[in-house]
Length: 111
Picture 1: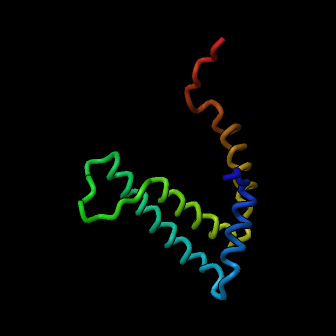
Picture 2: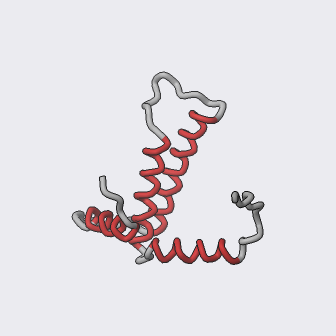
């Protein structure tokens, strides 16, 4: 599969949602869906890395699948509020590069 930009992903999700009369959910419903997906991700992480193994009756899911679900809902949320996620990402990276530039211990530069 070819790599997609965030703008392309946002456009792809918008085209998908645009097929349906219902359109995007309200911001509160979207937040509830994002929270639900985060819970499902937490459950998978706990199964793989925590102390709670899956029951034999539980469906096999992966962390990758749950992250994909979260990304889809996050894109829906952003689209519904007309937020460009690439711009949001650029702003937050600028914040980390400036405000937090000396917050963490840097790895030694290799010569």
